[in-house]
Image (cartoon, rainbow, N blue to C red):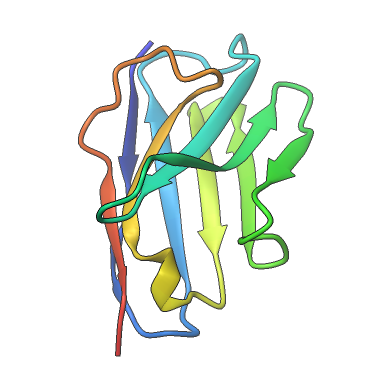
Length: 113
């Protein structure tokens, strides 16, 4: 399976974006799908992940602001990001967890006024 992230862009602090992770085949058999991000000069970290049963987990830095969801019919996992902060600026990637697939290009999110 291949996962492709999209939906990034430039947004002002306090704004919102929704990222999409489209899979090349059914995601119903994928146990855990996650969103990761890498800010300039920092290591890539997990932001949120969702299990096949719908359980979710969030990094402390995004709890209450980000929501991960999945639509098995569309083979897509979403990341709704609200109340964005400058420190959310990063390239965002989707992958399984643990991240054994190739990373792809990711999608750039820039939070700036």
